[in-house]
Image (tube, rainbow, N blue to C red; front, side, top):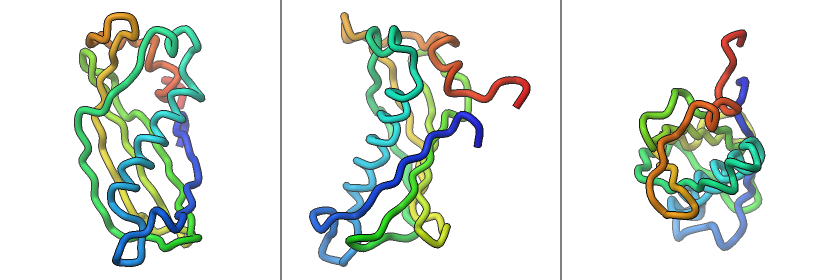
Length: 135
Protein backbone atom coordinates (compact mmCIF):
# COMPACT_ATOMS: atom_id res chain seq x y z
CA UNK A 1 0.00 0.00 0.00
CA UNK A 2 1.39 3.37 -1.01
CA UNK A 3 2.04 5.83 1.80
CA UNK A 4 1.39 3.16 4.40
CA UNK A 5 3.79 2.49 7.23
CA UNK A 6 4.77 -0.85 8.77
CA UNK A 7 6.53 -1.93 11.92
CA UNK A 8 7.00 -5.29 13.61
CA UNK A 9 5.93 -5.81 17.21
CA UNK A 10 7.12 -8.80 19.26
CA UNK A 11 5.21 -9.99 22.30
CA UNK A 12 7.28 -9.97 25.48
CA UNK A 13 6.37 -11.82 28.70
CA UNK A 14 5.10 -8.54 30.25
CA UNK A 15 2.56 -8.21 27.38
CA UNK A 16 0.92 -11.55 28.16
CA UNK A 17 -2.30 -11.79 30.17
CA UNK A 18 -3.88 -14.65 32.16
CA UNK A 19 -5.20 -16.16 28.91
CA UNK A 20 -1.64 -16.64 27.63
CA UNK A 21 -1.67 -14.04 24.86
CA UNK A 22 -1.14 -10.32 24.30
CA UNK A 23 -3.47 -8.27 26.49
CA UNK A 24 -5.94 -5.94 24.73
CA UNK A 25 -4.39 -2.91 26.44
CA UNK A 26 -1.06 -3.78 24.79
CA UNK A 27 -2.71 -3.85 21.35
CA UNK A 28 -4.05 -0.34 22.06
CA UNK A 29 -0.55 0.82 22.99
CA UNK A 30 0.86 -0.76 19.82
CA UNK A 31 -1.78 1.04 17.72
CA UNK A 32 -0.68 4.33 19.26
CA UNK A 33 3.02 3.49 18.92
CA UNK A 34 2.52 2.62 15.25
CA UNK A 35 0.70 5.88 14.51
CA UNK A 36 3.29 7.94 16.38
CA UNK A 37 6.18 6.24 14.57
CA UNK A 38 4.45 6.93 11.24
CA UNK A 39 4.08 10.64 12.11
CA UNK A 40 7.73 10.88 13.21
CA UNK A 41 8.97 9.09 10.07
CA UNK A 42 6.92 11.00 7.49
CA UNK A 43 5.78 14.41 8.76
CA UNK A 44 7.82 17.46 7.89
CA UNK A 45 10.07 18.51 10.79
CA UNK A 46 8.38 21.93 10.87
CA UNK A 47 4.98 20.26 11.31
CA UNK A 48 6.32 18.03 14.08
CA UNK A 49 7.56 21.15 15.89
CA UNK A 50 4.19 22.91 15.57
CA UNK A 51 1.70 20.10 16.21
CA UNK A 52 1.01 16.91 18.11
CA UNK A 53 -1.81 14.37 17.95
CA UNK A 54 -4.11 12.86 20.56
CA UNK A 55 -6.50 9.95 20.16
CA UNK A 56 -10.15 10.79 20.60
CA UNK A 57 -11.64 7.44 19.53
CA UNK A 58 -10.54 3.84 19.03
CA UNK A 59 -12.69 1.27 17.23
CA UNK A 60 -10.92 -2.10 17.44
CA UNK A 61 -11.77 -5.59 16.23
CA UNK A 62 -9.87 -8.46 17.83
CA UNK A 63 -9.76 -11.52 15.56
CA UNK A 64 -6.74 -13.41 16.82
CA UNK A 65 -3.76 -13.11 19.08
CA UNK A 66 -0.12 -14.00 19.62
CA UNK A 67 1.85 -15.46 22.52
CA UNK A 68 5.18 -14.45 24.03
CA UNK A 69 8.00 -14.52 21.50
CA UNK A 70 5.67 -14.27 18.50
CA UNK A 71 5.51 -11.21 16.25
CA UNK A 72 2.84 -9.23 14.46
CA UNK A 73 3.34 -6.86 11.54
CA UNK A 74 1.52 -3.57 12.09
CA UNK A 75 0.49 -1.51 9.09
CA UNK A 76 -1.13 1.91 9.23
CA UNK A 77 -2.33 4.54 6.81
CA UNK A 78 -4.57 7.60 6.62
CA UNK A 79 -7.41 6.78 4.20
CA UNK A 80 -9.14 10.13 3.81
CA UNK A 81 -8.62 13.89 4.03
CA UNK A 82 -8.92 15.43 7.48
CA UNK A 83 -12.11 17.05 8.73
CA UNK A 84 -11.32 20.15 10.75
CA UNK A 85 -8.88 19.11 13.46
CA UNK A 86 -9.73 15.40 13.10
CA UNK A 87 -8.07 12.70 11.04
CA UNK A 88 -8.98 9.02 10.70
CA UNK A 89 -6.25 6.37 10.73
CA UNK A 90 -6.48 2.67 9.94
CA UNK A 91 -4.22 0.11 11.63
CA UNK A 92 -3.99 -3.61 10.99
CA UNK A 93 -1.85 -6.27 12.63
CA UNK A 94 -1.15 -9.59 10.94
CA UNK A 95 0.48 -12.67 12.41
CA UNK A 96 3.42 -14.55 10.97
CA UNK A 97 1.04 -16.63 8.80
CA UNK A 98 -0.51 -13.45 7.35
CA UNK A 99 -3.83 -13.75 9.22
CA UNK A 100 -5.36 -10.48 10.45
CA UNK A 101 -5.21 -10.45 14.24
CA UNK A 102 -6.35 -6.95 15.09
CA UNK A 103 -7.79 -4.15 12.98
CA UNK A 104 -8.62 -0.64 14.10
CA UNK A 105 -9.99 2.67 12.94
CA UNK A 106 -8.82 5.45 15.19
CA UNK A 107 -9.70 9.11 15.19
CA UNK A 108 -6.99 11.57 16.11
CA UNK A 109 -7.17 15.30 16.80
CA UNK A 110 -4.29 17.62 15.99
CA UNK A 111 -3.28 20.16 18.62
CA UNK A 112 -1.07 23.21 18.43
CA UNK A 113 2.00 22.62 20.63
CA UNK A 114 2.19 26.23 21.79
CA UNK A 115 -1.44 26.70 22.80
CA UNK A 116 -2.57 23.11 23.40
CA UNK A 117 -5.71 23.91 21.42
CA UNK A 118 -7.23 22.11 18.47
CA UNK A 119 -5.66 23.03 15.13
CA UNK A 120 -7.33 22.62 11.75
CA UNK A 121 -5.39 20.04 9.74
CA UNK A 122 -4.20 21.78 6.60
CA UNK A 123 -3.83 19.67 3.43
CA UNK A 124 -0.06 20.13 3.39
CA UNK A 125 0.22 18.47 6.82
CA UNK A 126 -1.43 15.24 5.61
CA UNK A 127 -0.15 15.33 2.01
CA UNK A 128 2.93 13.16 2.72
CA UNK A 129 0.64 10.49 4.24
CA UNK A 130 -1.82 10.16 1.38
CA UNK A 131 -1.46 8.57 -2.04
CA UNK A 132 -0.81 10.99 -4.88
CA UNK A 133 -3.31 11.34 -7.71
CA UNK A 134 -0.99 9.22 -9.89
CA UNK A 135 -1.18 6.23 -7.47
